[in-house]
Length: 319
Ligand code: NAD
Ligand code: AKB
Image 1: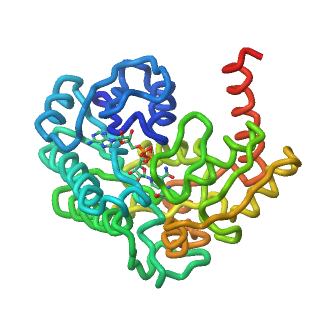
Image 2: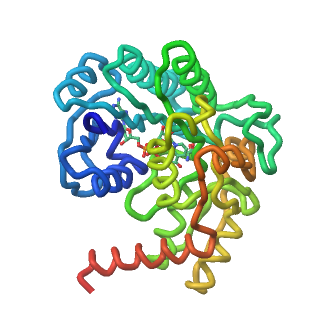
């Protein structure tokens, strides 16, 4: 690596874990965390209060820390963007242009920008959704991610920008809380289960969606960024797949460990978003091009979530 790494949106669900993993690999001082919000957990290493909408501030931070790689995680997620469509579009697109334009000038050498399964829509084949297929997203978030993918490919083809991207499914981890997504129920459910509280799910019981354990997502992110340039054949964004399950399936798995766990269903506006997304994803291209391989199935994910949240609970309550 020529310079240092900048993670933008580092206080969010993915950033919290990505910063930790990158610092373990490259050293605390080589990874600069940045956000408009304070970190969710105490982190060792530099932090910048950076608003990604301000391109001059971004340039200053990049110059100050001699940044060569950027992970751009700041965005408004699906459910929140439906409430604030113009703001969501503006944040998701302006942040990307600010980073891509610095990379185009040659200041930044490599960019990671995440896309999402939200790029797909109701006309997309829902099972084993291929890399190349019909994409007619119906949410502001999905439209911004699809446009973002097109711009990433454009900047690569036209200006040689080394930008790499993954279409993350819904991500589940115990170290941080999610922020405004449609798949957030799959994190919230564990927090209720571990404290023996009933859980009211905002999606219906048989709504199956593509999901992934956070450590698999972090592994995919670091692997695609570490891959040789020649291995990255898709410059829009790669499908990656972990596990697919419905609220009913995950609650049954939780009940194996906590038999008294109680779930009820009260679908809200997020149901419509979930109904427009695929149930499962085909990730042959990611497997073939840069060796993607997930490690967590539903059983392993549930046991990791419950064990780790239990440890946190015990520590918090000094038990
Ligand atoms: P998050 O909402 O948890 O975190 C986003 C972070 O960006 C927040 O800490 C927020 O404070 C920060 N932010 C917002 N506006 C900012 C600004 N103007 N300047 C700097 N920081 C700003 O989101 P996440 O779940 O960590 O997602 C990160 C990325 O991954 C997003 O692009 C999201 O679309 C994508 N993604 C996430 C998931 C998932 O399940 N978490 C799935 C698919 C794609
Ligand atoms: C959301 O639900 O908005 C995200 C995503 C799948 O992009 N988790």
